[in-house]
Image (cartoon, rainbow, N blue to C red; front, side, top):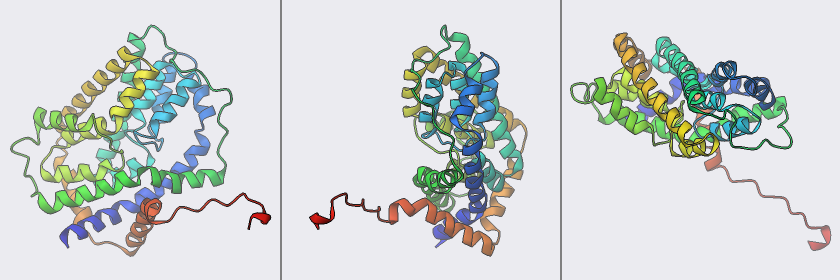
Amino acid sequence: MEFLNRFWATTAQMSPYLLFGFAISSLLTIILNPTFISRHLGKGRILPIIKAALIGVPMPLCSCSVVPVTASLAKMGAGKGATTSFLTSTPQTGVDSILVTYGMLGPIYALIRVIVAFVSGIISGFAVMTVSHNSVSKLTPPETPEKRKSFKEALKYGFLETPADIGKELLIGLLITALLGTFIAPGQFSASIGTGMTGMLLMLAAGIPIYVCSTASVPIAGGLILAGFSPGAVLVFLIAGPATNIATILTMNKIIGRKETLTYLSTLIITALSSGFLVDSLAINESITETIEACQHGGIHLFEHISAAILLFLLIRKTILPKPKKKSSCCCSCK
């Protein structure tokens, strides 16, 4: 019962922010369409890198869905630096992830995530541009550009496609959070591996090879902080987890090249560790812990119960609902 209570409490607490994030995601797909992005990322060397980071931070793309979008940008003419900047900053955050972080970990930590995503994107982009002799990607441009989404298509993307894309990972994240809170005592890792370089390297090793969504990683981050990992160590996980995985690394190797991919990974690791140490020096552990505990032990309002029910339905609808049958194309004489 404690496990179920923690699972539902965490879901109820984050659901209003996540649903609002889905709504903003719908609007962003209209405003930030591929044509708009390619026009601002395809010319120049320095400014496109900064623009790519600015565009990537609010984009609601996880580390899986950002790969084909990044490939599309490269095909449309975006340089290697801008492509890397976009790939680095985009999966770390998003309007949904930022809002959930604000609700679960507090405004300070949410702001830190935004700043780190933006800065790491710029640093990675400049590093790749510096070592690359050819700024153009290896992919050839498509014959016809993608059209701007209609309002109906944007709503479908925000409330149907996006929940379907992150549903499995987000549910797993909620389950892991409930398990951590149920079976691991608060502060259990603080005296051994949860703080300092050891904790950060452990989070780095866990985050780089695996796939984890920026939104789904938020409840896991809350559970890790309560278990004793420092906010800086958890930030390393929040950077390395969404921004890298095996699929992303292999795809980047194909798009920008081996040397550039190694530069991208090295820069991201250095940025993650530096950000982790900087966050730990701010001494914000106590305020973050209080925010997390208040979320888990505070009362759940009716609106949050309703939001949680809607969110869970959106996340699992692809699993529990039968797929629609295709209409037969045969003529009436076949019946």
